[in-house]
Length: 397
Image 1 (cartoon, rainbow, N blue to C red):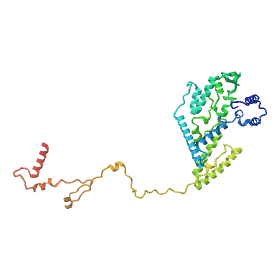
Image 2: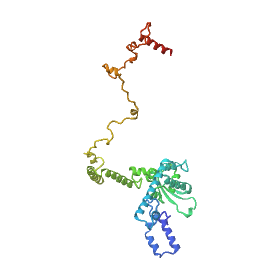
Image 3: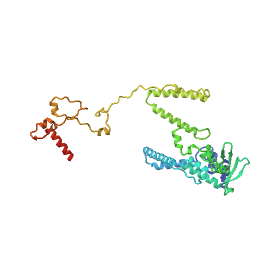
Image 4: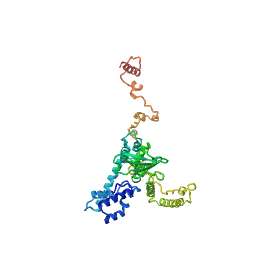
């Protein structure tokens, strides 16, 4: 019963089962048939369920709970185990997003334009589903009937045609709308193999943009959590949820920033009150975009009366400017040396910038004339003779 694509097929399969088992008076089956719209997939083709059944959801929940807890586990141990599993799920999701950003998907048929477009848009996991549907539709499906205006197609398997009913695919060339009786796109958000076969029959090399859902794209996480992406009506069945999610997160961030500041809290409450009144006027049609003026923009932001504290250095740290590496390596200038005799004689000493030290006393003329070892008969004075000898010795050297 889970493989029935339409209500007619379900009714036929149910009647065959009742006749084969002679179960016309079975009470439990009669009650089950009355609530067939709640459990049969043939009656739930209009709802977006991503192909997940209620039984699969309960089995997955039981599997997770059995892995993290025991009959003797406390509530705290169950909560810590569940938190650990959620952390692993989020880490796996981040790893998958990293692989989608860092690696490129290589299509099986590299010359196919549809597969190239799907590889650039879908995530790795969803692309594998799409590629399977594409190959199954192109290689395993055939078209039994085409209307004169190419708006209706009957698609069936290439083999065992007698054992299955054909699927009806409707195509509108004005807005590239395609619908199949299996309604895989309505329930999962991916085009079915029957639609792929019709697109191939019509030589359409691109997937219409309306059939590329944001939730299955490689950038879904970034677009979903970082900011609201404006979508037209009917392009994404989850666009309303995306809008509410973005608005709630934005309001939570503002309320967190304003929390604790009385002026900011009053300003936020007043702005939200004005915004609620304006939204009511817009919804009722009493205000249009041309004469809509947001009152919150004209309201001046409150000025904080608190000032920053005076900046001081901690105790034990000098207030002088910290020296750099090269300033520390630079050597200090040595003070000039002044002879003791010059200070005793009371000679005025010029400033250190222009001071030139005098000749040593041993080279002065008075000192040499007082020497007892004088050479008699020399035509030169002792001072001149001594200076000439010193020059001669330097030249010889």
